[in-house]
Length: 419
Image (cartoon, rainbow, N blue to C red; front, side, top):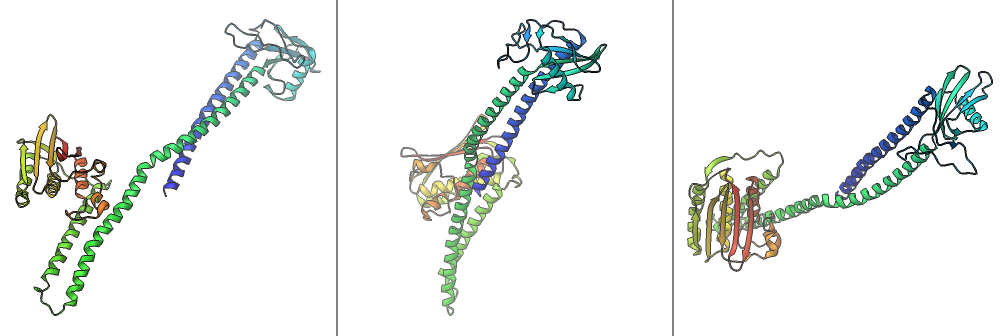
C-alpha cells in the first residue's frame, strides 16, 4: 500500500511540476513572439504611413555567398527591423518601384517576395521561407506592399524554444529526483504510524490473550470439579476475577487512547480548578501504598494553583505518575514538586530505584513499550500508562519528559499552561 501511495505522490507531484513549467515556458515563448510580431507590424505600419523615410545604415537584403549581412543596430544595440516597400502595377503585378529606405533590395528579390505575398491571398501575413512579414495597401499607382525582415525574430524564437526545451528537461529530471526524495521523507511518518499500528494490534492481542487463556484454564478446572462447592473452588474463581478485572482495565485504556486519537472526537470539557488540592488528594490515596512498601514520600506543593483543564484527566495523569513511581521506588524515596512559574505550572515526580537506560527514554511514552520489550508483568500494567499520560498532557497543550540517572534517579516532569 505504501509503495502505491509513494508512486501516486510522485506522479501527482510530477504532473503538477510539468503543468507549471510548461505553462511558464509557453507564456514566455508566446509573449516574446507577440512582442516580435508587434514590433514588426509597427515598423510596417510606420513605413506604409510614410513616417519612416530612412533606415540607415543601409542593409543589403538577400543572401550573399550563403552569408547574411550584419543587421543595423539602433542606439541601444538592439537589432533594428529592416523594412522595405514594393509598388506593383495594377494589371500585371510586376514591380514598378522599390522604396528600400536605405535597404538595398534587388528587383528579382522584390518580385519574388511580392509574388509570394499575393499568392498567400491575404492582406497581411508571414512568409516563413523568405523570412519576411508583409502587409498590403492600395496606392494611387497600383498596389503597395511593405515587407519586414523577421530573420532576427526567427533566430531568436528558435534559440528561445531550444533553451525552453533544455530548461524543461533539466527541471523535469531535477523534479523527479526531488520527488523521489520528498516522497520518502513525506511518507516516513505514515510508515512509522503503519508499523506502530501493526505493533499495537499485535501487543494488544497478546495482552488480551494472556488473561483469556488464564480464565479459560480456570473455568476448565472448575468444570472438572463438578462435585466441589464454590468455597472449594474459591482459588480459581478469585484468580478468574482478577484476570477479568485486568482485562477490563486494559480495554478501558485502549478505548481512552482510541477516543483521543479520533480526529472527530469531541474535546473533553475544560474548567478552572485547584490543581494543588487535586495533587494532595492523589497523594493521600497513595499513603497506604507507600506505607506498606516502606517508601518515603516528600512533597513541596505550592498552594492555590489554578489551571484550566479537564480535572478527571489530570487526576488520571497524577495517578499514573504516582503509581509508576511507587512501583519502582519500593523501600526508596519519592519526591513530588508542584509550583507555578509565570504562566506555567511545573509538576515534577522523582523516585529512586531502577534507572531507565538512556536509549529507552525516547521510547518510554510509546504504547506497550515495556510489554513489547520483555512481556513482563512483574510490576503490573500493560505499558499503556505513560502513553496515556503523554496523551493527556498533549491534549492540555503541555509537555512531559523523563530523565533518569544514577545520581537523581528517575524524574518525570510535566509543564502545563495556567489558563
